[in-house]
Amino acid sequence: MIRRTRTRTPVRSLPAAMGAVLLMLLVGCAQAEEAGPPARTSPNAAERAAVERTTRAFEAETGDARLPWVQLWTSAEFPRAMQRCVGRESLGQLSVRLGLPELSLSYSIVGSGSWPDEAEAARIVARCAAATPLDDRVLRLERNHWDALYSYELTILRPCLVARGYRVGRVPARADFERRLSSQHPWSPYDQVTVPTRFAWYALTDACPPLPTALDSASAG
Image 1: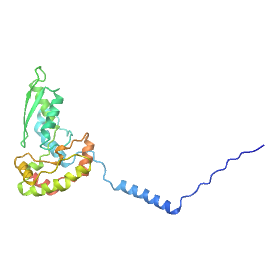
Image 2: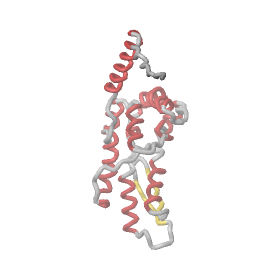
Image 3: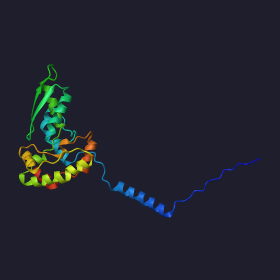
Image 4: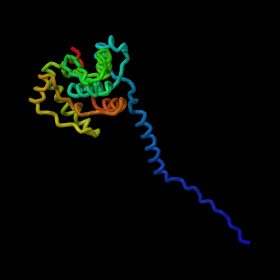
């Protein structure tokens, strides 16, 4: 009778050099993971200030002073974002008109039914205004800060957004850029950026350098 025996293939050890390389890679990965900043889960100072400005204005009507969140809108995108919110909340029965930079609001009931009535229409507009924060810092910058703003948007912010896959138009020529600022309708690389969630917004704005501290401070004045 023939016996069959199983032979165990000996376990071979990795060459020392390869083992050292793998160890370095594993250590490098661990260090990279530890070095990265934690993912943000709450509004930063600029976002909180923008939300608080709108919330304070309408808190008496909404009865809700919590900090809602949506993307921080530029002055170019704010009217469209506000209209989308009001249209959604009113099932298409309301339309809003906005004045910037003072953020004056007016609305009209465009539907023919009895809903919403005046009180409910005011509540819808108030809720949307509190949940549609406007980043209006550049609207408050004096002319002597426009050089720094132009440089930031041209050389830092736009390239960062483009590198992350967003289609952003070219920064306007300097004269056009200043004309838009003068008319209180500034151009911003964020004008054409829309993100799906708050965490996508946090990831994007954490990755791209914020408005420089000097400009942020100047806008507060």
